[in-house]
Image 1 (cartoon, rainbow, N blue to C red):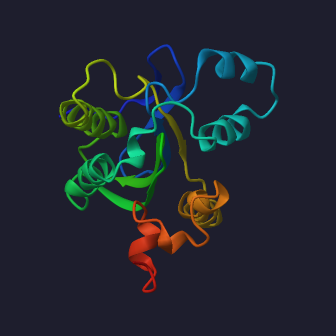
Image 2: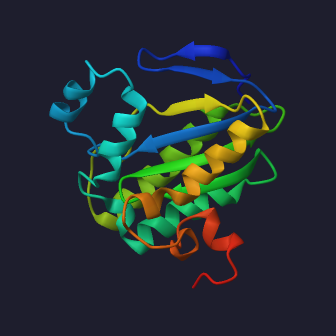
Length: 186
């Protein structure tokens, strides 16, 4: 079992890892943002907003658009819900995943992300009959500062398919917590 690390980095983005902390996390497919897009983000003031906008354009192979791959990833997210973490909201987009998760004691965010990504990497590559990295090595995380921040973040996560023009109502997107909250969803 890995101990939470507080602030740390693997040479990419800084991360905050602490038990009983609610985190917003985004991780993406390895080919979701070409180098030219990433280099274009460097001079921008609000990189996070630009980064999300570029991801929503659906660049790369978009393996999560395939129901069997999206189902595999969603099942992995739900598998240890209530044991290692509380999954408060999630949304699988064609080339990235958003989750809002509360870590439980004795489990770290980095441990959980590594577990999700390594399990689904192997299984997805088997199903797709491909080799190579499935997920980008790093992830983005932000801890929730208060209830308002949490509420707005959950709204952002669940409305992401609407904002990206994939559906006209969040509850219609099958790879999201919104579809389980909305009694009108398919």
